[in-house]
Image (cartoon, rainbow, N blue to C red; front, top):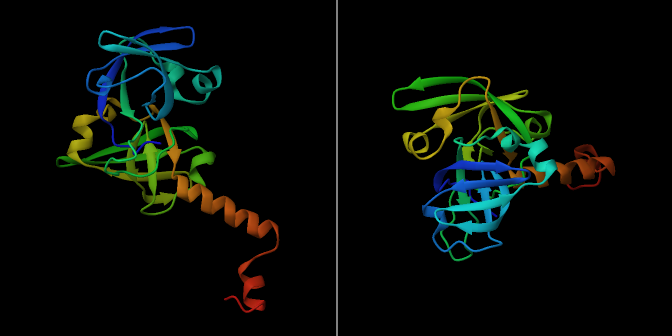
Length: 208
């Protein structure tokens, strides 16, 4: 489990087969084999440790369903270690299970802040609600003005400084993970409807 608060921007130093070798500093403090690390929002497992770098193994499905397959040596990546049970919780509940790949639609500067509009695939768009949470390349952000398959987020200066987001341009692909709580509620309500438990049903039986 992660929070969507990026700890460090690392860089790919080697990509071979189904392995990524990433150079980093901060997140390697206390890192051990088998630890979980979110790389651009995708939960991966540390398979090897070196001097100032670590290796993760990526399955063919993960390469195919995320932007990780497009990474090359020199590319920056957002990094976050799995949250500690005794740590302070910020951001929102992030599993590191990318739901789909979306794209940057538009970027508008507003002084030191900026407003980013994204286009989401259907597997993400169905969960978008105003003020809900969304993870973009591992960054916890708040949904603004969702409309069909597009939505906006307001990005603060600290996020622009401490993540790889400023390297993105309109048309670029990004990993997206919808809010975990929203997904559970959505599927719970779909299940109720499939069993005929609609608002009208509840009203007829005195539950509304």
